Image (cartoon, rainbow, N blue to C red; front, side, top):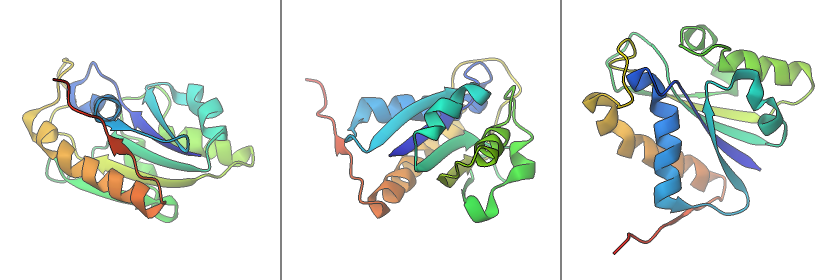
Length: 160
């Protein structure tokens, strides 16, 4: 089973990217039984049960990289951005959750799509225009990752 996990705090603008991203996927696509969409929000260790049921994880998160806002980065289990993921606004960092899973003997394959935020300091539930504009590119990258795993969601018909 593959899980797409969107992480973030919806109240801190671009920090909520992962949660917005999962909501968008739910509206646009139908996924087969091999894919779970998970709103990881700021769940921290609350994600452990979900992760223990997954063989592969695709994570979408805003990560302060110091790079140009809207830049997208892809990391695998061989180059997880441990130091960068310690600089987020989550109560428990996702990298700590993955470490806890590994200590318990569960090591799912991980791909992380990280986006450099434009605004994570202000309070608000909308994404900055910079980050909003890269969502189609991010969506394409995640769908390509799924396709490489022979998982092909179908687009939902547009409402009349």
